[in-house]
Length: 141
Image (cartoon, rainbow, N blue to C red; front, side, top):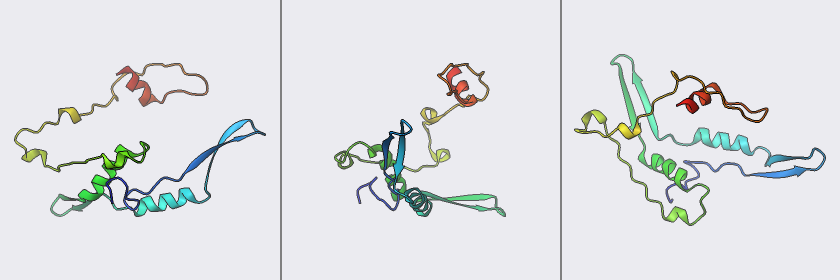
């Protein structure tokens, strides 16, 4: 199976359509009855890219990676919604490493600071929309 195209690893989302309701004068989203439930169950039963075990006695956490599942999930994010030809052009490479074992780990590009200590910036939006508190702090940053 081409990476990103495994329906067992990453179940396809239910299809939806928009229909204009003449009586109400609004657009309504429609999907197949039960499709959301089937999607939820497929997601729940899909394999996880990582499994973790905690040994309380030894205070150790064991993490097992399933690289094929991780590669499918990474690929799906790259190809989804971009047409059928792009899946043949995707090449996914990844490496799992323990940062403490690397002599010179380059992690700065992956550091993400949060905005908890920032002040909230007031942003006016058309009613009834408004930003959440965390969104207002992100705008400040």
